[in-house]
Image (cartoon, rainbow, N blue to C red; front, side, top):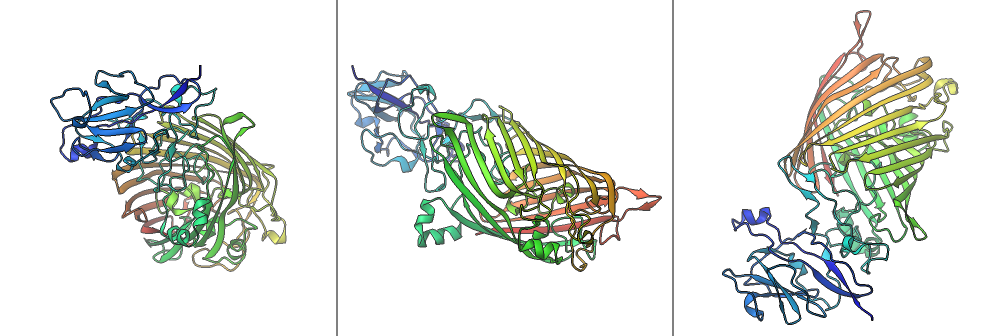
Length: 635
């Protein structure tokens, strides 16, 4: 006999802060158990109730309408209703036959299951629209899985993983248990770049949205596998989409930001080795960025998808993002020692492969080809991705970008494996300094969402400095061999810290690293090839960021640990250990504008034969104190 399948979804009406602010009684869901949605196929198993947080408070006196094939009416309008001393909302769940009562608060009325609910309930108002009687319930992306994280005194702890919806509105495949199946969450107008809405296959987001990211680091520049792209439509995009709507349909994003900064420093000529604000006591444009981007949909696992990213940067920050062979910055910075330049910091394509034929490729494979941010630093080259305005000393002198192919294979929700080949750190494949290099990374995230560890062999080859003997050393380029480990720990959703350490080395290098030609300038006098360092030269670094949410628009970031050990002057040209201490504050005026003031003190810790090492202010000072701020205006 042919049977009709019952596909199960769920809604919850929880007690939330909004109700408390309105000083209403703490009312919550008494009963809504099973929502039958008829589709053809095999009979599905019973589904446990899943909780979703809604957005609109609806009283029993005003509710009327239809939600898919879920009718909502007042108690007075139902037949044979259950008596109650309080006004109640009755949710009538229509199906092809009478459903059994799931709780004591349910009663069958004709062909409907009546569920008693409190007087005040939370239902998204946008859902109260007419739908065909036999279509699945369209659950908006604005509905958050509420049972994934239980908020405790420490700010939150993962209690259970969120059941994962399938990427289509079809019945669950034969190899999928109906118990783990809920309808697909469709994207709302608020998230036009997320075809699956807010649903995700990764562990729940870790951090509060006030921070630069709600995720642990781990993908070198784009959204992690299984995490939806929840970017809003920025003002520039809105104007472009109005003129060319096909771009929005194709999920192509076009946006950017302006990032000026100003500082007051005890140095007069140069803030180096501080980065990126190297010009003291002056306002400079750190970076002006325009980005064209398309992120592949890695939430779904039914088909391949593609993406790309182009981030063009103009400003003084390009002195650090520069890579040999990538013009115009390569010629303007390395060849002419200019303060300002253009640099395509990111220029790559992405291809997402969820499965081969009918066999899933673990949790998904992403292949990235082109120029990309090198993993796995806490900090990044682009301003919105950082906790503070200035960068740590160790980040200043490590690897920035790589040009090659990087494959990221997500084994499951906790483990990700990465492997790649590239042309050497900060070197284009067509440059004379290019050398075939490999990289490998392993990332782990705890099931409780409290910790993340990221291990990276950033680059490994023969380790010899490049072209030290060519053009009288003027073409010399770093060939850093770098090993990183990064640990993220969440104390609560409001408080977390990130800690990173690295070890790097080169063989037969020139002091100071990659050669900058051109005339010396006050902001940077270290042009020309440095002294020859025979044999093995090493450097090490460690940094910690402790971050605290103050309000929904403010956080404080403390960098209490920042050490760079440079015993032979490989990275800075000065044989010393450097340290800095920084406290900063970020205030978000709105989603488009923020400001980040900070106070920073740094110094050299070593002396040679009783003479202090003086790396600051063009080699004149042992220490430096700065106060400054930058502003990020998105468009």
